[in-house]
Image (cartoon, rainbow, N blue to C red; front, side, top):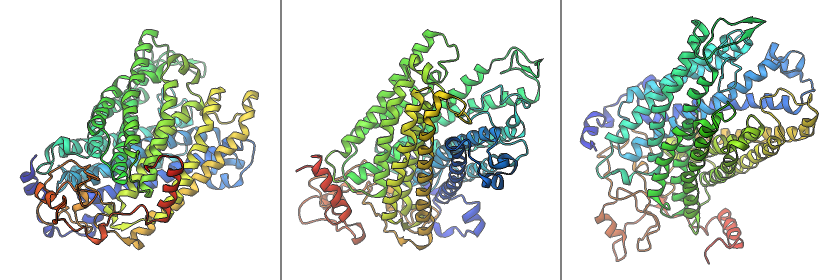
Length: 632
């Protein structure tokens, strides 16, 4: 714990910094500003990904309809008001790529790791602010390259977000295998460089720059989640980089890592001896840790938000850390469950199946610990809390279907159907998005010094929650009926025609969910300028980020960095005069808080919210009482 080194290396007095507009807002080396840059870039990419999904969902719901606006918006790809089948595959590919990598990986982890790691650990900044800045600019450049690929003449990459060869390895295989695929590979190379720079910075900061008293066992679960996520990224992203380099060799230099016995126009390809299965092994060796690179930061944020708003210590702190470590180890040895139908040896399939079912255990530990934390808590239903509880709901409902897909015999029937789409959109996509929304609502006061509108937050949550289940839950039944994913139209298959109306319902639900995000965007951007000024600690939380002043300083604290004297979940101690004891309160300060005549007065802006003071909370209290969940 190099507190003194931190002071000298980064902790120059904040008054020494005289930033210009460029150094403060554009080429910033302040972790808080970089967090905001990641977040706003991620929001822009999420809007693009969402719009792409609406276009191809309209095609699936109304496959025989003519939409004149498509030609206006998409040009030759919407000729005659019909979506071009090749462009449909491109939309599916870029939608998946943007949401998985650019939103749920970079925006989620980049935003909250940057914001919270120095603030919650008591550091002036990241271990290397310059590399931190480079990480963002590599991410921004990769985002721009990916968006440019949508406008090339031959169309964007069209091999699915997994870019399996031979479609990705043969530039002439289809229109989307040409320049669009090359740009995809360039973009992902830049993205991986960004991710590695960020992850190494996070690890170095967590290991070396904790303030005095911040032992590993006193770190908030958010930091543990970011720490495990960064380790996963450092160990797994280079494998995808290697896979992409070999793919470029096959595309441009005549090698045959992934190609063999392929005919193009009745002419045999000269490259032989490779195997597309090799690419699948390399891709999914990243791909399954990637699921947890996405999920773990969201779970870490949820741990903090649920404990704070339950006014209770998190249940099973060490078990939660153990589950994060268990998930991190197991995620590297289960990639084969994505490949059960590749002709895998049945014995090897059984090994991957058993390991896949075992990884459900640490996930279940987290779920039960969340439920135990909520049980009989003095629940404060902030928008952030609702999204955190929504994550738990999606994590359970989406995770249960993973048991089916983890079973080799069942997966052979369900693979590449809408069942898989439903599973990963619930357990990974939607759950992680809910974690991201929860984090934004909870730490918005820390990021922007303003408060978001609570009523708009409630409306945003309920519309989004309803839309997510209406979109993805019916897909399970489509998958059980054998409806395959990534098909342009189902009208040519008699057994699928019964799902046409369901596709319309799903598309209308997706449009509703998209409109709900307009509420969020208005709430988010509107309150940056016009929002009510945030108090220093609006949620009465214990972690160190709420001890820093509302005004952002380069260096976080104007004087000495606070020291840590306790774990971060000291909530509702019966003998204390307030129901939260911040980490920087010493034992002497705690004695003043405990009993007797000596108590520390809570500032007016930190008054404990009363469950009886809010009409909204009263409604929830009555509902919980009706369900016999509230203590008598």
